Amino acid sequence: MSDSAKPEILVERPEDGIAIVRINRPEVRNALNVATRRKLAEAFAALSEDETVRAIILTGDDQAFAAGADLREFIDATPIDLLLRHTERLWRAVSSTPQPVIAAINGFALGGGLELAMHADIIIAGEGAKFGQPEVRVGIMPGAGGTQRLTRAIGKFHTMKLCLTGRPIDAPEAFQIGLISKLVADDQVMPEALKMARDLATLPPIAVQQIKEVIVAGEDCSLETGLMLERKAMQMLFASEDKTEGMQAFFEKRKPVFKGR
Image (cartoon, rainbow, N blue to C red; front, side, top):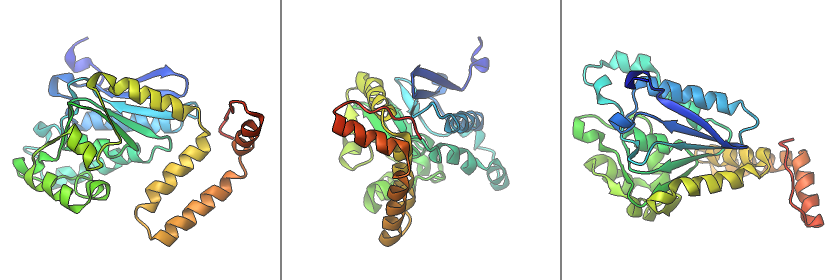
């Protein structure tokens, strides 16, 4: 198969309940061109509808998660070109996925790569990973959440440093400022992501999805509104078969079997 014929996105099913979505453009450090973003959105849209999938791992390769946008598609682009691409719809397919998404990061997560990682729910990174928003150094700025999601994740002052200087930070610093969930040795990124996905896949999927939905929605509302969303979601879970199964298993001292009902 020629390089041009290689699929930009690979979807793997290593175990029951787990899917791996892998960016597959190693020749350009997994730079995100429009075709790749479309394939990524298609993969997540399909997995969103698959009730057998309970956790998703989003990853690249050992050298890069994604080293940013493919600048070859930007150098001659006009404002109308950017508008008509509607890439916000493609990003939304990742962030709106009901199942928990784990970003497993080795190497570079820069620009659009870091913005993509922030569409996940949990970030596991290797010690050699690099994170940054370097757009200012080529005359533009982050345009897929680098100024907004990043501020919500790590606060104004860390975000200003990353976006205004365009300089990357290493994984230990990213962990220190709260950008990543777990820091591991480079060769343990995928094993740790699989371990976490495996654990998530055994939990009641409706409860997991409700927790994710309320946390995401609560970021942009008042505390009182967020607490109301939390109460309503918790109350709804008392109608689920999995609630009964989980509590019965607790008292019977056995492992519960959750069916997503």
